[in-house]
Length: 288
Image (tube, rainbow, N blue to C red):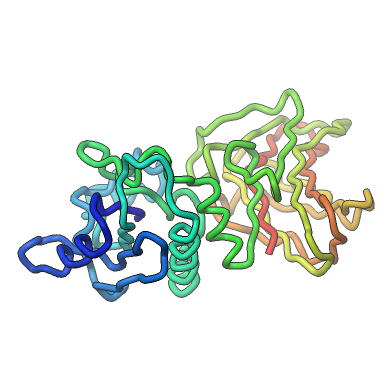
């Protein structure tokens, strides 16, 4: 959970370290990221959010946790500064992202929008931090990049357009009906044996090399049993078309394969060319 201290660094950590405060956090990041104080061990509960978990505030994720005090299963990171400030120092954001990468990697926490969240999101009644100007898109992409991955969402607003782009054909419907999607929802379309269109997940490769590609979807009984993913290089060569069963396994990553990609904009195209009577779901693609 991302917080802002509503004070400077020295005041923040000294107050959190004071038993009289009756609050705490696992980490505090200073103004330029040059110093990070750990006040509570990650495996120990810190008192950094005064709210019971409510999945409706978190894209209906893990609703079985509803009513559980959020401090029981979260790590709190305070940042020197204020929720009202217009921007945050790049160095502070970079060091914070490196910390989050380390925590998620060590504890097998998914690096997505349901697991890296703001204090105000889960406690909206009386908290707004880290505020409206926290650069969530760039921040989460930075966390992912530091952990060696790039995620392309089906919605452009959740992508860093420098390295990730999506093209959705007309006729594919946007929705968030089924939970456990990446980003803000997903697109779906009915299958057709003669269809030629598909959702393009494009990713930029700065230096040619081997990459492993994963896909994510929301599952359901009406999903296609063999969703076709075309793997296409920046030169326009189709390396392979692989199929995955979207009826199960929703909300998690599934490996499509490992290929060598050249420099430039490579892409994964999710087609809807399949026997009629099902739907295909375009949610996200991960490259690592």
